[in-house]
Length: 79
Image 1 (cartoon, one colour):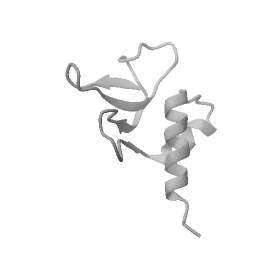
Image 2: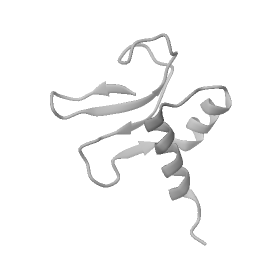
Image 3: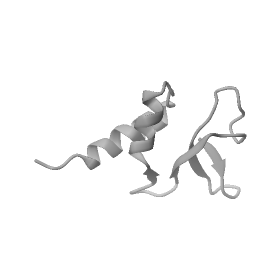
C-alpha cells in the first residue's frame, strides 16, 4: 500500500509493486484505495486485477489479503 493524503488523514492506494521498492516509491499498477478513518465501505478494490496479480505470484500483505477476501465475499451472489 502506498500512503497518500494529508497529515492525520491517511489514505492508502493499493498497488502492485516490486518488493524491493520503497513503500511510497515506484509501483507497477494501482488496483484500489483504502481510507482507514471511514467506518463503512472504506476500501475500493479491483478484484479481477488483484486475482490476476496473485495468479502471477504476487504476495498480498495481510491487510490487502483481507480486502480481497471481503471483496470476494461481497461479490458472491446471496443464495
